[in-house]
Image 1 (cartoon, rainbow, N blue to C red):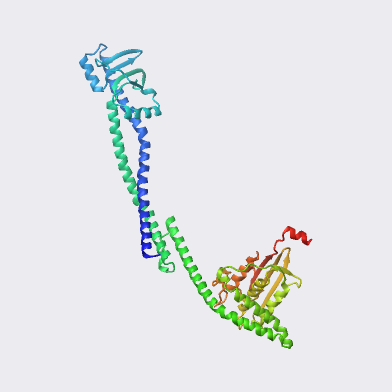
Image 2 (image 1 turned 45 degrees about the horizontal axis):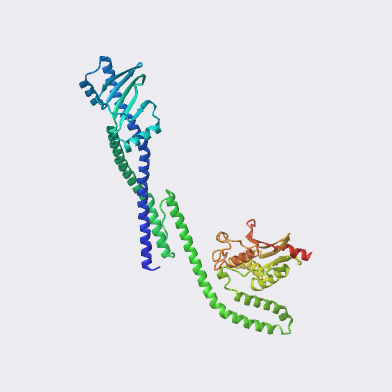
Length: 489
């Protein structure tokens, strides 16, 4: 990636962070406002009811006093003062079935709406409240209800709704301003808190990931996780572990790439050398000597395998082996061939014991199965030649055994050597990490496992062995199609 592209990517990341912060801020304000609206709806309805009840109670108190003092009609001046004090157009009192007009204007306007406060439901109160706010201001209301909770004393008022609507609008304005203030304060507190607890750590992780992607092989780009106090800190810890493993993998991949390049250079000349050796071996087989005739076929097969391996030596570098050409082969003959080759190239004190039935057959690729068994037996032989080469008391024995159990052939390679160290057990079957000896690559076990898995089998280390090491291989026969089975029957 060029510097310009890097800067653009960084700019986009910062824009994304600011966009997230702004979204968080506005969403917080929006949610608080929604909560305030949900609170405002019943509260404004309650405000309207309280305002009407206050007018009813005030007029009721005045009506009771006037009704108790004088049952005669009040002078108009006193009525006007009473109406002005209570903010009404007319006041009437119903008591003990009797109706009395306490005070009234000369020209009483026509009533357009009436409300009985004792029977208003919550839903009706909300509807009436918004009806007053949206459409009120020029209405004449009749409001009546009991005074002091006494159902026998009903106060009846006629009044304009303009003062009520004005009071409700002032209340709504105050609630709105207070809601905005609360929303801004709450959003600010949440913004700064979340910015400190979430946005900053996320920015730090994002910047680290960007730096690591630009130079993943630099150890300084591995994030240093903070104390494990929350999920983000735990995520930083997991990211640090992932980056560490990724760097190790990149080193191994680079090692593999360098190895592949070196092998490809060697392979070009090695194939020519092996071809020449093959021609000379063909001529050597014509020599009339018993010892030569005995070893010449084995030498020819060994060189043929070497030529084949040289032609396919890059297969492992591609992390893929050729598909096995499975057919039934004699496992005893294959085991003897492996033993003869390992005996010639190993310490003569090592004893290789074969426990394989001469008639045992396994359905597998002959060359690939030879490589599997050869790698296991050769690794066992090399284990005796490392740190215990001078130990005369050490029993040097390798046992290669096999048996059939139904459609599965079990092959076992066991030795009486020093066994596998802990590091090799942890990295078993891993190239360049699972070697049991100094200087080893661990490719032998990795290749053996890959070939066994290609046959649909399994390979494992027997952990129950106390002395030495033992590898167990299980190879199932290839399923036979029903038509083929009927044809053979």
